[in-house]
Length: 89
Length: 454
Image (tube, rainbow over all chains, first blue to last red):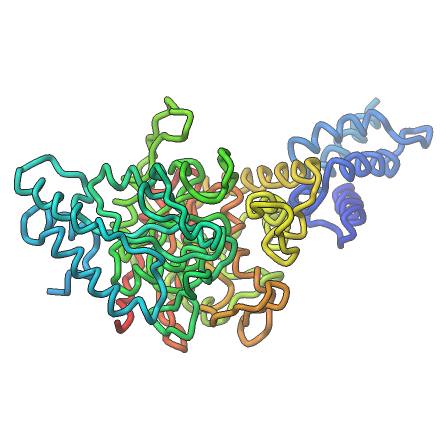
């Protein structure tokens, strides 16, 4: 499962819906500010830091992306970039 | 030569200015048709007895060689939600049976400045809050077949244009109130970009506010008349005496049009889908590239949900008298945070439309998912419409209208065909914000369908 798939599925869970399409906008599909906060928390936990705790740096990065482009594709890409940067040290 | 009552307003104005037709003669022609046809159709609420004096004065101005406005001497009607000084304005409500405004709505002022003779007020549902024109003043009937509704809320006006009782009409639209009756009555209608036609003097709201999404705009029998009327009506305005000036961009050359015929959540009647494909083919012959496409991630169900929340406050004049089954009624008690979330979603939707119109000049869609409806006076909760023989929710009728309307986009509706029952099917061209002249240009490519037999 790709990062985008995980985001799409998590968004769907929060909206009591099937996974979103990669280009769907979380807010247009019914996401509100409370669910957005929960989305970031769940994704930070789904892609934890190396010690296994939720990755707060990822959370901060995703929050900025969410305002710009609230799609599974954009958030998934952000997760991929963040993890690649971590792996590269 | 066709009878003058079928002429477009532009032709009537030219004939009056050229001395070939007198304004008084033209008004009498329309009044005669109103007297003969309106008792069976119930399209007008009020006829102004002073109009004859103003028509004669218009003729004297022509004789004196005075400079003439673009609608000089042209008798026409306006929806009874627009205030007319000295002439009763009911907003479809029994409460306002004797309400005579002291001042004109800004749109009416604009008409008078252009030389028009406002001679009648057209029927609408109480507070414009339905998509039929049923009020204590009458149940407006479709001139193509009185067993069917005109649609609404600008239904009396759409019917009056279709029946040749007026050349043009000024209506208003928040969830399809110009577009839907234009479609059902087989006339052209333009829902302007939000904000380019002043709303002052429109009822509702009954407060000194400028409501979201609501627009005032024209209905006519030709696209040229829509454009003439938009020119007269649009401009800066508002009770604040705005210093802004309006300079609409010219029409884009119509080269590329998207076609969106339906959405799984709101199925479209097969007869309408077929007509949309016929129109697309016709556009292709005019050299337009038509592609089946829709903005990515934009769905009717999402847009309807957002619109319901945004329109909840707009549609409810008083909290206590709302019906949960009315449009937006379920959200009349929503919190500001709920409204704000819907507003955020609306502008995200608008951003997707904006990107889409970088690729396409306009999008061709259904006006409604269903064919013109029969009269339905049941409570909202019990009303249904038929789509391809299957029952669908009554408010499915506004799904296409709100999809673009809440994003403040312009839409031009034109008749394209008659359905299997002999009632008109309209199609809608929507475009980018302020792209009004482009949606009009696209609509002009659809050939006319003619008049009802009356």
